Image (cartoon, rainbow, N blue to C red):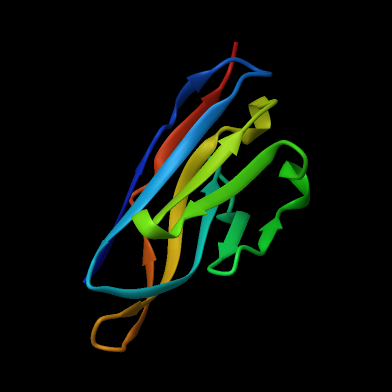
Length: 120
């Protein structure tokens, strides 16, 4: 099996910054894509950003220019640097990964979520 563990959430004032981390562990053969999604109260889960193993990135329009996704392939870890945070960024942030396991099965794995609250 494969597990994702997120960290870095918290309370921040509008205009502030936070950095989320997500580390994958377990029976990992390769990680094709890693990403971040979020779910605000009363809303559906939405894509924030993704990054594939080759480095290509994709962002939601609402976070372009403010958030940066990066990954350390050697550590099986993905990061989300969030700057110029707004109250509407408040949500539970989930890490996601598409993984080929050591027995050549494909898994889509989710983390448990980390809460980001942007408030004065």
